[in-house]
Image (cartoon, rainbow, N blue to C red; front, side, top):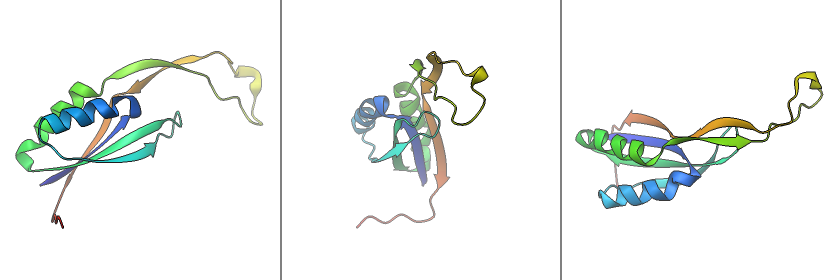
Length: 109
């Protein structure tokens, strides 16, 4: 058995949740916050048998796509402001960061 932990952008959360339910996979959703953009993320915890890992990874890949987004840069605090550019910058967001972990024991009460 494996535990799949997928950290995805909030915008992809409902689409992924619906796709997992459609394929009869159960998941626990946790609210989380990204470090770089300080934006909301959702972490999915999905327990599956080994033979279903690739199916779940395919579902995640199909529903969590990376995309470009404009963000306002944070002004420097006490640093050198000479190189500071106050214009929005385009960065890549979305996609998924996925961890597949072995599970020694699973209990459901």
